[in-house]
Length: 297
Image (cartoon, rainbow, N blue to C red):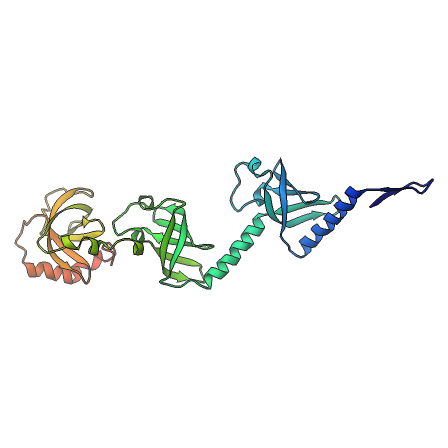
């Protein structure tokens, strides 16, 4: 590039560096106009972000490096970033770039692709990305789905951390899918042994088991007789004068078992003469109505 001509003898002063910088600037402008992705290596950490080598210097703000905050910027020196131009200063030949924009556009493309293929009943692999009191969120590859606590395990759990942790890869079943709201409900239980099958040898009428109380009400007790299987002890089959509490272990005799509805009644202590037909009527009728959700029905 000719950058000066001597007025006296007409000698030309040339610059290869300026020519290279001008070509680079033209490429940067073209990438900006055509919304192209360009690669550049991080050369230096500066206040508020990093500098990259485009053939000229470019600036990437810390907030534009990843979708999540970057901890130590020094770890990026020498690494390549995939960038898009987000701002140009034509007078000063300064350029601001973003890798975050590239990552978000790729994520949105994955979401669109995933939304077109998701179906209820599908088995998908995902990664646990967040835990809440009510369940675990799993990244399916662009869309987060929720595994409610009731779908994490057959056994009753208080917090999802009892079953999974952040970073775990899990195989989940799509239970519900709303493409407009982009909401997905998932289940992890499908990959676990069914406790009704696993403990079938213990589920027979008249069997006595040590169970753990999970809920206490004036009209019934809810107990877990084996992990993942609950039974209801109706009023009249426990001593109402005794102060029962969740977590307490008690001996339960299984009175009725309905394998079709997966409902079980039991007795802790016969303190009243309750006819078997009354117990069966309670189990088959409205007595279980309020317990459907708690028993996983």
